[in-house]
Image (cartoon, rainbow over all chains, first blue to last red; front, side, top):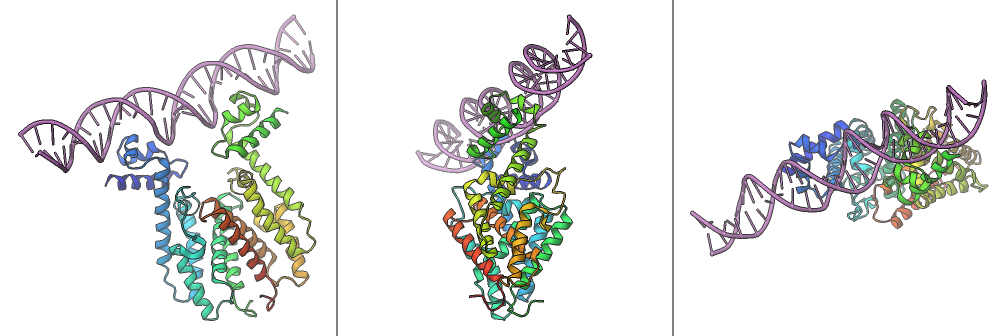
Length: 192
Length: 192
DNA sequence: ACACATTAGTGTACAACGTACGCATGACCA
DNA sequence: TGGTCATGCGTACGTTGTACACTAATGTGT
């Protein structure tokens, strides 16, 4: 399918040149087509970018589904580490997945926050498990999940806005905060 | 000063047309100048945008300094509310302050996260006060402050990416999470 | 086999963008 | 009076997204 070839080209351009360097002409060249040919397959540039967003989201879901840790708390630790890795090793794909505005018409129809997103559902399941095992205090699962998500998103968003002095510092602070966050969920008295 | 007139024009354009509508030509027209005149006062568009970022940051600092609550916990509540209001009532100015990448050359030289930023210093002072008063558990002030910041930034970042079904939902979830966050900081046993 | 509609791709052209370059104007000081 | 400097403008170029009109290929119905 030509559409797939265009999308592959777009992903390649995005990875090597970022969103700023993502132009119709460059994608077309990479796909071996004339610029206008893309418009047979995507209504406009926004639609192409939106396809990249979908790609980023699927990539993240695959990553989450691939986390193998048995212990629920360790699983959540691995999740937060995976999130950081995703943000650092595939920055543009990550941005496509998490920072790109969804098309206004097609907002996330259901409550992403309320756990309808596939990825967040997995997270909530582990939180429930940890609570059942007495590893976490009895606070609302949904609230914990939101905190976890906001945590990651907020940190990466600050890093993208260059609010840290260096990437090393960002990583160190992220990890410290992650540890403290998970600790703060332990039942009373078990905090170190 | 002409430079101030340009900046005012830029702020007006930003407010009415957003970053997408912020063009040299439009700012120049608003300021009653030819497009090229702006280049006598700003090296290029990035420098102008950077000035808008500084403006946004000062605006936020003014807001924070204006919070009058005596009780430290109430002060932090007011802070989180003010943050939400800022994001919703002056979206572009907020984005300039929190989401715009700082110029690569001039990264935040000191550790913003570590409390060198004026605004965060005020936050940490209140957290310390709450801990001293026995209102918060004895967890690292810095970690709490980071969590608070990341929380806000993460939520707004998700809203900007249209990850909520509506603004009403966003507000409701933000407030719920805020309440839960502050509750989770109370000393053991005092959680409802 | 023939006529015709649909699809895929191209080439040209336009408006809007950031901005390099060179020139005009006036203020100020010698 | 002449020279320097700051300020602003007009023109022009390259790059962007994409509207429009066109051609070539591919079915599809008779």
